[in-house]
Length: 309
Ligand SMILES: *[C@@H]1O[C@H](CO)[C@@H](O)[C@H](O)[C@H]1NC(C)=O
Image 1 (cartoon, rainbow, N blue to C red):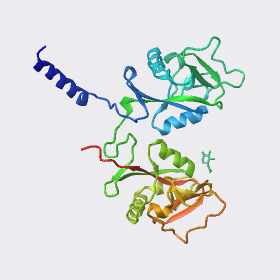
Image 2 (cartoon, rainbow, N blue to C red):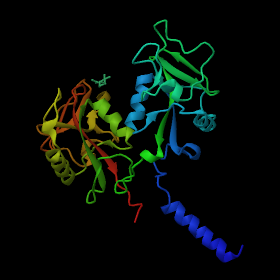
Image 3 (cartoon, rainbow, N blue to C red):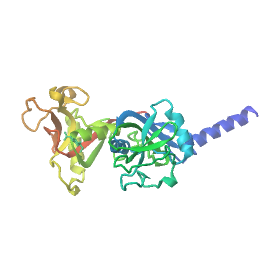
Image 4 (cartoon, helix red, strand yellow):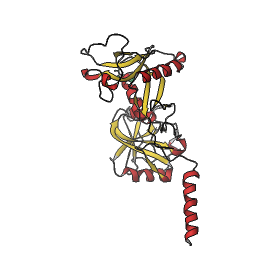
């Protein structure tokens, strides 16, 4: 082959690689892309109950892995060799005793289905959720046991938002502030809100300037809050600071709020008493706090990096 034709082939290959792919190969750095299944996977060594594993994957915009067929099991087993031996998979008899389905309600006959001899068995009142060993054998046991698990994201389902460099919907870029923001209209308590931002590779918003406070105030004004029903603390939006563990008013990045650049309270700055307190702002951008249990709106924030043209 002449140098010219291999150069052309190389260029063609390059063009196909960058433009000829119908699917996005980009999801998150902590997920591994497996070519055979055109999907991304992440192993969680922190054990969780089955339902918490399901929630953890959902919050990352992914799903609790189960093998759809033998090919997928084999491809994932290769990735999995470096990790622990047993995981929870997305199969349970949660909806109906004795009837095992995937979390998205596929019958066992339509998915990879390889049980320890004599299983599945949930007749003795336990055993509603399914674990799988590295050898691919499955067994049902209590959903409240804690096991590692794998989250999966199919590449066809990834929508990459270039402006905020994220696969998650709803982030709005503010170029002046150099940050992206997302206003959450699903009220949650502070701990949950913290976890939700974290799962989207962002953090509960920290106000660093008057300008940023004004912007968060505007985001809050523009959010269709009136449509939200249910029981929550209206009038406040949770932010990334608090007097957690009685350490004083610190942002989730560890700096005092004064050092962070904005400490304009809606009233005199509260003393640090002997309580766990969580930070928020009134809709007008002034800081406030409450104990950490009420649910309310919140804002996640993400650094904006100029990595693209
Ligand atoms: C926050 O909500 C979660 C889930 O509903 C709950 O488990 C947790 O105890 C709540 N935390 C506080 C401090 O109320």
